[in-house]
Length: 221
Image 1 (tube, rainbow, N blue to C red):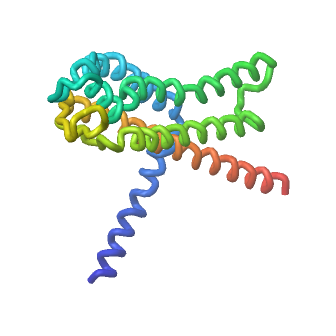
Image 2 (image 1 turned 90 degrees about the vertical axis):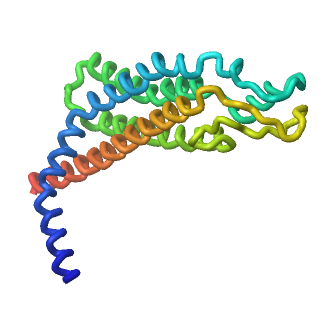
Image 3 (image 1 turned 180 degrees about the horizontal axis):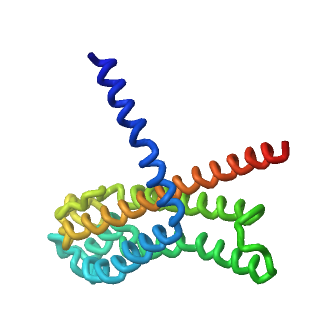
């Protein structure tokens, strides 16, 4: 019975394969619009509108149950070496840089009366740019995990701090912990989507390049 069910599942997957391929090609065809929508709407807009409210005066609202001078500042710096909103702002700038690079490159090529088709060195530049964005997306997620490893993906409401000059241990309270967890998870999800789309485009560019070369060889023969 198991081989029959497996064959049935395989036939279903095979029947849906053209539909899935068409969807992937449609996404890749309009990839710049998809990527810009993700970046501008789900990153820039959320970063400006939501993050300002969630992380407003976060250090001032971070309190510990001690009056030891410097304890609150040290504990906050220990758990949050970089402010999350500043981290996401820097990530937005860094990840957007390769796109600006290729736009400037295309504009320069067109200014020199080159053809509008993406060929030769422009394809290589496009591939390198997408690869850089993919690596930056993955690197930002890994960097986020390393920076906030002491806190974790789910930001707790209560943190135990044993750093000097605090009396050991000291309870510290994180304001709006649930909102910060939801916001950080959302930004990580967007980074994952962008990285996945970049990976799809890398595969698509490689496929088009190899398929185009084979077609050229066949036509030459």
